[in-house]
Image (tube, rainbow, N blue to C red; front, side, top):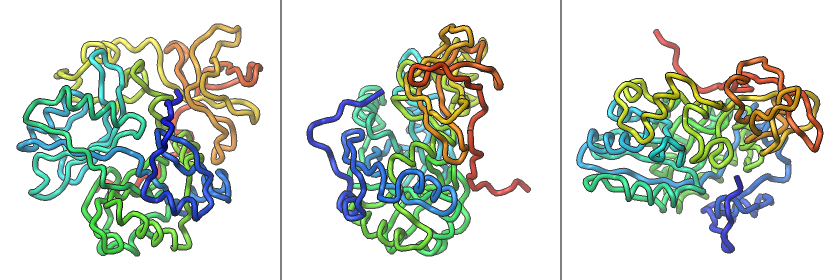
Length: 382
């Protein structure tokens, strides 16, 4: 789903650096963003898989929910999402979805509970760039009076992703330690006070660094000076996240999809399934019990031609089942891959289907996701 682009595009704090690096800039969610650098999307994709890539994701919305204590703020967020935030421990991060009253997805976002006494009653949010105005208006309308939204427009966000990301970042952070996947901690990166999250949007191990916008270029230059690090644009970001089986808002999820249809069951906490109390709870709990009518699935296509968004998905005899929501040629997979929604009766792994590509009906198979195994850093359980 294409977002309308304003006439005047906003710039991230790294805009000048992107131009210096000869990035090809494109409009995205109201910002001028780098889609690729001179090496090209394929090289950038492979570099993230083998070493470390630096992404500018400063267009994302960063904000805080602030209340008198943790439980009050957590309960307020739980009234709008199906996640468990009362039980979120300090220094931990969680994925969730903001819901309409009938269970549709307004946006997906990351929520973190800061560490330290001064973080009591605070939850930090990272929301999608194209949805932040919608999200903020929704929060202001539906939050209780004792919990307020505070946008943090003075912050930038960098993502360092890839198997060598931890090794690189450790050179620039005193006592990085070994934080696990979906954890967050305060740190000084190149002498700048930051929050470092061990998470990302590539399926690889990596970090996202929230820091003052005024310091972003200096930190980015320091990281790019490392031999393992290359700048990465939106093109490779999209192919990496699709291989990882991760949703893109406005394409794979939107207000017409529920988290059950989108196969985001991990975002619906066990306690919330039992208790309800979130928007669309009756519908979502019914879909959990009885199954949805349609489901997001992964598709692997025969040949080399990728399917694009909107391509019809059918049975071999031409019965319409749904449509592709994201598609590309997966460089790591070595084949065309896609995601889309199909009638749930045809969603089992191995099911043979057809996808229309450039007017031709091509064989496709329902495949498990992720297409490329995640390599998030988790410590083994004792």
